[in-house]
Length: 129
Image 1 (cartoon, rainbow, N blue to C red):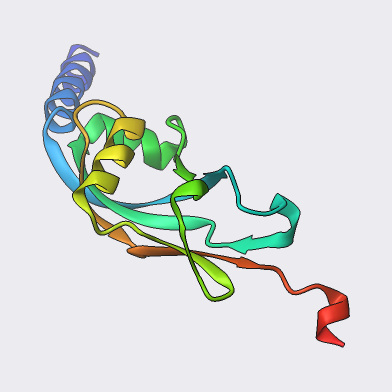
Image 2 (image 1 turned 135 degrees about the vertical axis):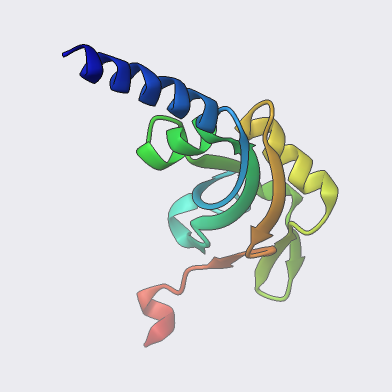
């Protein structure tokens, strides 16, 4: 019995020490668009992005277990119109900093895939025929 308690205590301290370190992990986040250029129900969009981030093991575990919300808000008013679609490039450090602000303290965004988001007007049934 005493041995089991010692093993549990030892494992707990080991786990706390391991999770307090920083790790780099790639996670999928859902995108929530704000200020869409057209009605939201007539737009087809990219709905997820893969973000490679550096954070503590606690944060990464929270995202993987679904305890922390894996949602990134993107302001569609900042998209540039090109032909029949809207384009937003995320490769700039300013955009990475905006995402870091949303994810919280002690998180560093390393990479974002895709690096460009597209919003295209959905094709209605009358346009297909």
